[in-house]
Image (tube, rainbow, N blue to C red):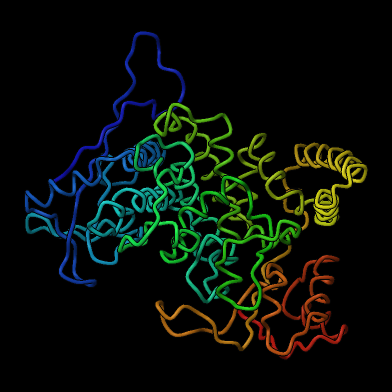
Length: 479
């Protein structure tokens, strides 16, 4: 059984000739099931269930996802199937996109090793918002097919599952940020009633309701779902991932709490290991010209993004979000510079921002005016320098230096706690303060050394910190 999802839009980009109707791209959606995690998939054959699933993907986020998937398929068609097909495996706990599918149909076993597919739960939210996010991963898989990215992923750096507000590793941040930006685009540009009710916080409910829909729970509603959909949209849209967390004293709060310290900019290495920062750069590139016409009108803008994504991945550089911004050029570079507040190109950017914050807080208009004048000169210089040489976006980003501290942290829901692991060129002060035996002076010493010059490797880290009296025995290098 299959479902054809169509949307009247210019999926291929560019203007249509006068008098010709817009193309009607169609993606075959095929629903699958299986008897266990190790069993092959098979088509769902029960007519009533298929009809129910069809109804669940009849929504704006799903239609937007299909239009983007169609575009990616046209730009990078796999060897098979012949036309754009999105397989969705329905199973409990499904919220993933994977590559490599085994299907048994009409007694024939098929191995589609290069084809991405989704694993989703059988409920409306999973087949709308989650579907949009996971289709982002499927699109990425289509576009990078044939490019070996395995050696760029370092799952050892973050011992907890990724989250928008965490600092993990650059490859995870890039992959997830690309998918997260689609959720932010939905929140910003979606015009269907359900989307607007959620993101506009349109209905205010008070008093016991028997669920988590009222105002009592709203401040932690996102944390209770772990996905943090509402908070991540606000932070992506407002570019708040340039700032250090406001949380202190607990690993999960430091990594997952959406609260930001608006005075303190993140270090360059931390910035490019942030899913939220990647999502912000891509979101601002797509949404920069507005979106009054809704989601489908945005699809032509993605052709350039997808092309740049493929170019960036072919470079196989150590910092993919920098490669993507450089490949996109102009508007994307401007967004990167503004959203990062210049910390990857200017050693003084964080201090200048802190002075602006302090002057604004104190209502010191004279000082603020002088700082703003200086900032405009700096921002012009950043733009001109990077326009001449886009590689300068990574001028202050050092290599990944993975280490672990023997402190067990984690989320019990996802397994046993693990040693606290991080990139020494990315971890911020709140996380470094959790290292056993380290004082504020030790943390300050590491940050000062890193600001002067990123660490080259674990040996360089240990040597430079030892000279400053920092107990480096608390850290173990990771391969």
